[in-house]
Length: 288
Ligand code: NDP
Image (cartoon, rainbow, N blue to C red; front, side):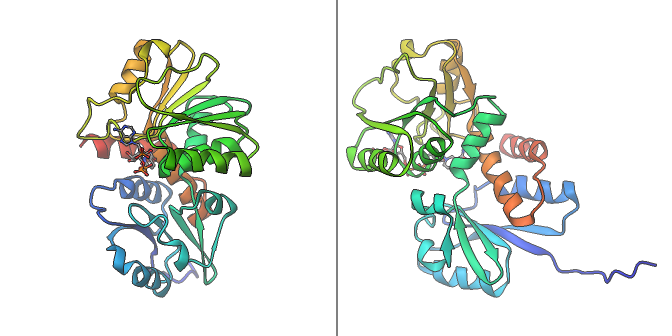
């Protein structure tokens, strides 16, 4: 007989959001726990903005291993935490909290998930590359900062309003080694011939607006350019299909979503994430 005492206690993680019912992260995290035989649970928890402080107190009271944050809590959670990773501090937003003893530390794995997907799924090293981001919201900010920290030589931020675009360029210029420039997005954007990577980091094309594409001069998309989309649902966006028809290489938003989840999984459990299991579970979940 084994000397080990049986434990019925599961480790808890999850996501706080509002609304949160359509967040699919549970599907990939639960699949990963099951594949590795870990007694962990991922909970999808609806938290209203005015109850975020209480929710974080609950997280501490339940001794949870951590939590993901989604809209509208990624910035609002910061005052309730005990510390931030240097990257989360730079980005100014937290999507993953990790409990270290009795301290809650905020991280941002969104941009790291994208860098991981560029490296692993597209087989491209960001070092020395010229990258163009369409959009300057939370996702663009996390991705642009992490690409710059991963060695991208030049980052262009294309946005329709300068009040979000210019501060991101200023941040990249002052806090990362990359060169950065802002382009005011008025009409169809012509991708410079020197660009290596083009990223749709706007919400254009997200379900149910599946036929919408960002305003890009399609003839400026050349074979060999890596065209990426942040939209995970549907993964094959109209934008990616148009880029593929021009001979570009494409990278979908599922890779980033899986990547950020895989990094959070490792931070929480200390175990390498079964990335293929997570992607398959997410694909099946989104298709259902
Ligand atoms: P934000 O609301 O913070 O930013 C949206 C950005 O899109 C802004 O730059 C906005 O421009 C721009 N935008 C929106 N509509 C238009 C339009 N019609 N024309 C031009 N620009 C437009 O959102 P997030 O950055 O948080 O999220 C963006 C997308 O990324 C969402 O669809 C989200 O689902 C996805 N996402 C995917 C992740 C993944 O892992 N795959 C992770 C995180 C997010 P302006 O500043 O001028 O308003």
